[in-house]
Length: 139
View 1 (cartoon, helix red, strand yellow):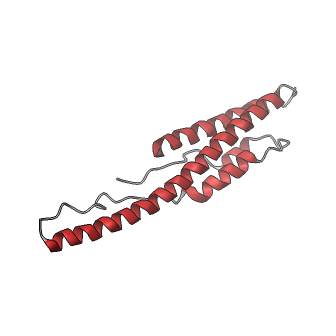
View 2 (view 1 turned 90 degrees about the vertical axis):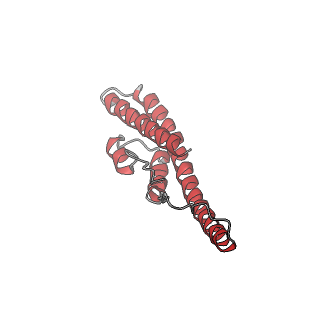
View 3 (view 1 turned 60 degrees about the horizontal axis):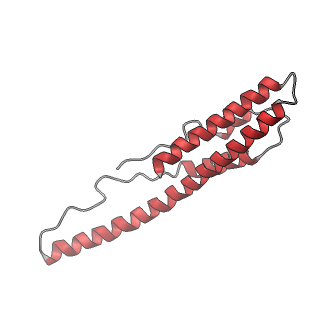
């Protein structure tokens, strides 16, 4: 197994550049910052983590058991990190949907800024889609 890459377009700077300056919603900003805090923690699981099958000797079986116990410990650590990332991605997904809905609603009341709000809503939807795709790769 190798490392799983998540978060291609999931950056708070990408969102900040797109959102209208007078949009006060902060949920997506916070969710993206939380994701960014854990995104680089994706574990890399070496393909040789699991020891090969032992010969039927006390020494090899004992060594294999020790190796398997170590592998389980490493996999439990990796699972905890991946669960943190999944939780952060779920938050981004939910916050992006809320932001997009808010921005679409606000766009209806705007004349000159309507395009900016529609564009920001599209960016928020795109961020949510990217989070969903990344989430699907780790679930």
